[in-house]
Length: 296
Image: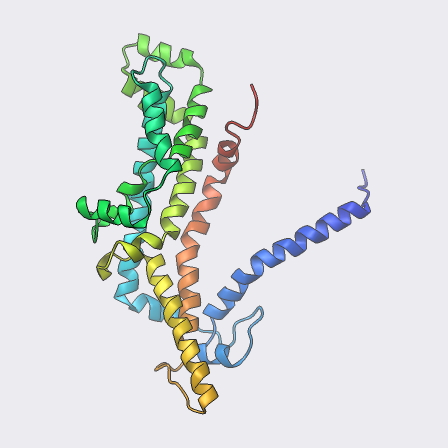
């Protein structure tokens, strides 16, 4: 059957195409810049294709042991922080589904109150210092182990599972923890994958914690390092602009690599892993975000 093209359909496709292009173009521009000769890119505008194609920007980054160490810290905090967050949040949510849990209302408000009232920057800093988390790797993990909204989403999903499954396992002698590990978790992959994706992206993109609570350079994550590169690049650009206005020149100390080209290459390296992970969680993500949206 031949499809009829209405004015609305044409407008809709055009609008979506323009929207997709405006979303993708910044990424295309960054890729092209990161693969360009830094001096060529600085002197000539780049639109879609690299100028003076080279991998030198990426080579320079991977030669830097500081960046590799930051990358390892980011991977470790993402994996450890996400796994612990999902497991403990699921455990807390499953406990809240138990009708015979003593103090169930208290435990619900215990996790709900901090989601409304925040202590602020200074109280958090004092708390972390007293707990020995300043300049400690676990400052990336412990403060983010629980999230009220994630727990509520998981609790809603667990409540939709047939109670007869738990009863059958308990009749066979399984404890509550064994039921949680062997029955509940395997049946909850959509919501677990969704929460893992949310938390993994947060850990991967977080630069704030490394900037304000860590001064040890060996513990900086890659996003904090990238933030510092952005600041240095802007300072260098401002210095070059002032030097140009005064008739003098500023040397970057590099021949084919500039701070801007290094920044673009770092952006790609910092973004690519999370983009690669997303498609594998897509099939669970769609089911997970539907939790609680359907009545009944």
